[in-house]
Image (cartoon, rainbow, N blue to C red; front, side, top):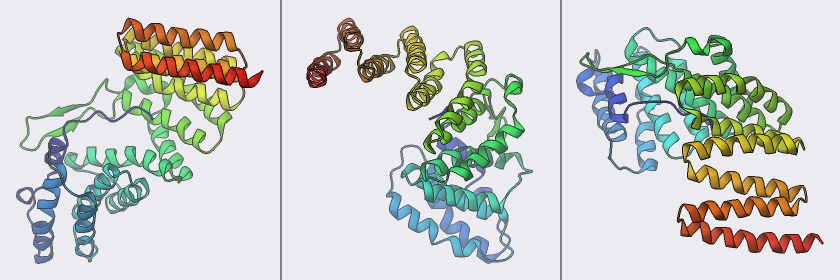
Length: 326
């Protein structure tokens, strides 16, 4: 998956949204009733370290929907409720429900004029790409991707802020300098991900190839080359599905070199494993064994007994498979 949103704590984001009873001045009895019931739910959801039943919280939030579906209810109240619902569903690993709640929030407030709502609005649009894709609503996900891309063309990414910041000089903290370069690079990476999930491997590879030089240049300038691992994995998978094994190997080796430079041990092990599998698929038994040997040597150098044991298991399995192919 793509680059994640850089964000402050959930509690700070909640404060930035003004989602507390004190931050709202209800103008009607129904609004007062909604706020009295909603505020403690919101506080539970967005307080760091708080625990709650996701199922029960979703039910409690859904029970408030009739209160915000009445005529004359402020759009901000509708937005706040469905934003919170989407956040809960997202944490519960329920992408279809999260995407539906996010859409309800965005329909209620399709544009924002108050800075306190801007980041939440962006967050819902950004997160919905993956929520939609993971619930197999691929065309809707791509529609969101295209919307971001038309607003932030690839050649102009370097004009965006390097990273987002929070302005704490106001009573309610406000998010500033977003979207960042990393966030929009993540949107472009999502394009390839969604196309690959659709089985459109050639289109996915082309999208990733367009992104690759820009991503290399920007991430090198930002000193965040480790963030290349997702894109390189994606394009290697595209090439594998297309039967372009040499290209897949080249991208995996680039990913491996970055991981070695960054001492990203988990990615190093994964690269050695993927390269071993790729060689085995091409019936290059000796090369597969060489990659596995490097895996084991790396585990020995790191004094990682767990990975050493896994290397021995992989060696035994590789031997059995090679015997079976004879």
